[in-house]
Length: 160
Image (cartoon, rainbow, N blue to C red; front, side):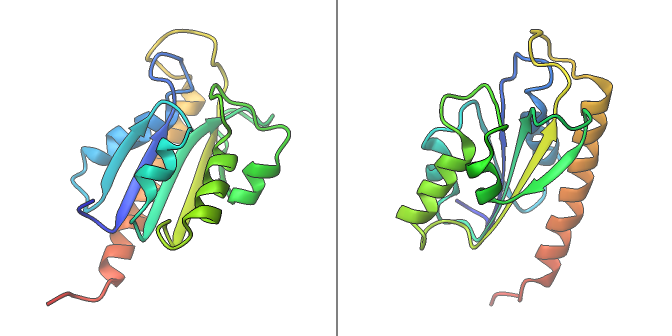
């Protein structure tokens, strides 16, 4: 860990819209912002391990909740832990993993956790091209994160 903030994207790089979280992280990484970035292909306990020690974390994943494709959702751990509708291509749910992390390692998990879900349109096709609505949501998410990160860095007290 070299920064106080991490942006984590979760998804499958081979499945059309499930790659949305990974795309967000790849674009953020190219911006050379003062954040660490991480790409994960599963929501197992690696999520906890990668988040520990950070003060602020942004986690971006795709979802199938029945919203219009490209809808950007900001949710809490409890929202995704208790949602019976939240389906994904992962063996363990993101909500269960995060809830476990905060219950077992509360002092080491980020004080500020922002979970962003992007509603997908297609998940069954093997391609690296997302649907236009999801592509648009990815770019909007990147812009939003860029602003949030810039503002949070500007608000931090200078260190001597």
